[in-house]
Amino acid sequence: MKVAILGFGSVGQGVARMIREKNLGLSITAIADSRSGLIDNKGINPEKVLAKKREGLPVGSPDVTARSILTTGDYDTLVEVTPTNITSGEPATTHIRTALERGKHVVTSNKGPIALHHRELCGIAASRGVALRYEATVCGAIPLIHVLEHDLMGNEIRALHGIMNGTCNYILTRMSEEGLTYDQALAEARQMGYAEADPTYDVKGIDSAIKLVIFANTIWDWNARFSDVEITGIDQLTPDALRLAEEDDATIRLIAEAIPARRLLRVSPRILPRGHPLVVRGTLNAVTLEADMAGSLTFIGKGAGSIETASAIIGDLLFIKEKYDRCSRKKT
Ligand code: HSE
Image (cartoon, rainbow, N blue to C red; front, side, top):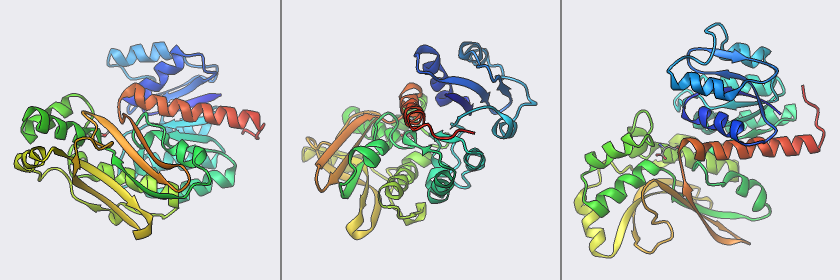
């Protein structure tokens, strides 16, 4: 299957590395970074492009744009991994729309278009008979969207709650276990590269709320918006509050929760007993699903990182490759 990659930062490079290292039947025919692009219908050698990035060079020519790749490139599936813009969703939404309208599958880690335009984009994909997959938008390496859409088919999902932001979890862990101040812990989290470009998105609970919207729209088709989420971040949390929780053998975590019976979407710091399944440490994410047949299921894993996010993207790519090859669906 031929793949075009738009966005060649940490996630795009992770995907290219895994395609190079593993024999997956995937060939990269186009790549664009923020400055340039490269098209080779016979297949690009990922090693050469990764070496250019290591040297700080653009991947290709400034004349080859994302638009020219999208409209003239020879690819089966677009991997859209440009930086997230949660206000407008652009330019990623236009990239995804253009590819779907051309009858191309799309795999993305980009939270903006999926949180803002899920119903519209899924509608275009369905009308063109192609796939739109976005496992990597929520909780990095943890396979949740696929589980919800496939493995739990027939279950009624009665609630979902969890830790969906590694940066906040890291800050809270370091503050409670090592007595770091909020500013010290945030500075460490930023150094690790987990925080968003603007870390207020993390600490004010916005990133968690965006992921919650993606889950709610996937599970219950609510067409929910970011403004439907009640949000309290961790930026106002005092060391005293954490200390008091510790004295009761408890701790504080930023929990995102969705409860359909009350049509509730909420992100807020919560006191949890130390042994609670959602009390994970460091940058981990943890999500519990309450399903009527399957019962309570908790998933724990890495919610960010180049290769961890690539794991979710590669899984989506291979799902498409298997499904659409096997069904002999028409490709354009
Ligand atoms: N800033 C996010 C986090 C990255 O800390 O979880 C993954 O979406």
